[in-house]
Amino acid sequence: MSAVVAQASNPIVRWEYFVDEWDQILEAVVQHLELTVISVAIGFVLSAGLAALALRFGWAAGPINGFTAFLYTIPSVALFAILVPYFGFSRVSAIVPLALYTLLIIETNIVAGFAAVPADVRDAADGMGMSPVRRVFTVELPLAMPYIITGLRIAVVSTVGLVTVAAIIGQGGLGRLILDGLRRTFWTPMTIGAVLSILLALALDGLIYWAGRRATPWANRPKGTA
Amino acid sequence: MSSLTLDIAEGSIVVLIGPSGCGKTTTLRMINRLVEPTSGAIEIDGEDITARPVAELRRDIGYVIQQVGLFPHHTIATNIATVPKMLGWDQDRIRTRTDELAELVGLDSSLLDRYPDELSGGQQQRVGVARALAADPPILLMDEPFGAVDPIVRTRLQDELLELQGRVGKTIVLVTHDIDEALKVGDRIALLNVGGILEQYATPDELLRDPANGFVEEFVGEDRSIKRLQLKAVSDLSFNQGPVVDVSASLAQAKDTMERHGTEWLGVTEGGGFLGWVSASDLDAVDDLSQAPRALPAAQVQRDSTLRTAMQVIMTSHTSVAVVDDNGTFGGVVTLESIREGLEQGGEAL
Image (tube, rainbow over all chains, first blue to last red; front, top):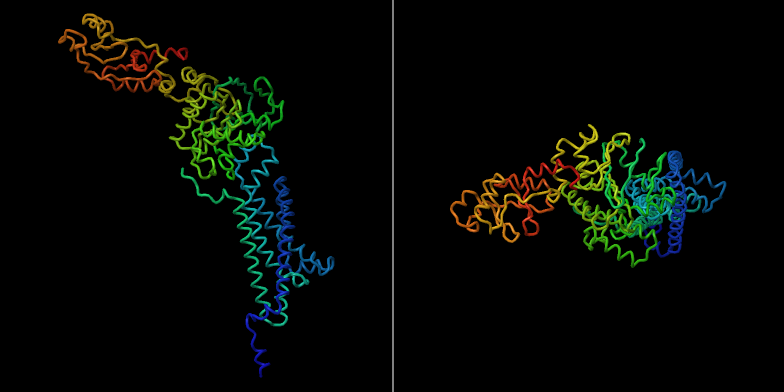
């Protein structure tokens, strides 16, 4: 009788799970965080390169945008699966697609940020004898920062979500808990995995937002009166 | 653009003006090589501007543009310090210079820690000028510097520029499309036509008095004489004493003076100072000039008043004469006739 009751009772969260599986949960969070940070970091570096190309050579902007948009359209499950024959059920098979998915978001925002630098500011910089390299790093990059920060925030939030999918190739941090719960029709790990994934996304988003505000103090001041 | 030859004197303000498409901005931007001429040469102090690295050239030429182009992410102080920083000045020297410039262009030092977005348009333009002057370049290029501010602020900034120029004596090339601004601030004006054709290169007074052709005449406007009144000061006139005698003169001398000038009134001075106007009819009732009532109010102008101001004063005075007040002493009188003669005389008096 008591066994039947136990089977029928499948609450959203069984709290003792936290105690019993604490090590597993912590490991999943850490792995989730690692996959996210590494993927976005690689994606950011690649995006910066692509954006530099697009900004330096106008003709390259269209093809680069088309290519990154094409990558973005590939279903994530398919992309993870495609890489397994080459890299096995490894971290690489997870990171490559995750990084590629960020390209469209980050590259587009970097280009938009530089495009938004007012022409008169650029003209003034040139007119005062600023070298192009100095202009890019001391004037254009800081002014593009709000756009780049926005791109990073979107990329991080979407990557945190996508990392859970990587669980199907044996990676995926919190995705493993979700998959585990799904397989066993056991709500607790599913709920914990999903909720922690959301909290992780919010926390990272908030962190970058905060860092971004610290980095762009001029953008948060009231406007002067005419 | 067609070929263009301009000689710009050191320490003067030259205004480039003309209709859209005349290449005035392009000409300006050729001087600091933001635009490279396809042919011809530009020389500064006899040295071709292409002879040295472009960045070095530009750091020696102040550059002010209509939209100001302040760096939004830098404070006002940092904006002003842009060129000194590139030149590697130390912190103390930069700070001293920044404070000096804020003072020079009339910026409150409390604004130095603000960001450009927190300032009004007029204040931003002052920062733009301060930034351009930071490393004390001998040359200043100004591309429609007052185009983005309202007319009241514009007039004030123009006055400030002239005052500033009086102190710093830069060689300034200024682009504008506003003929009144050109006439006001320019020592010489280069009037360009579409395609970069130089129609006339002359002083403001010459341009108004003696326009080279129909295009110039039309461009400067129909009210050329009125505009010239604004350019000249009372001190440019060779004014005479007018019907004026010292208070110690006899009544006979007074009447004689009025007769010579053909007036019914007379000015009375004492010890060089102007006392007032006396009516001829009042002289019969008195024994002495000092007793005569000085009934007519005296309209006064200063030596540095414009002829336009003088004319305004004359129009509203009872005697059709303005008295020149030369720091409290009587400097002579200005009449409509003397103003007209002054304009006819041309630029020589300047």
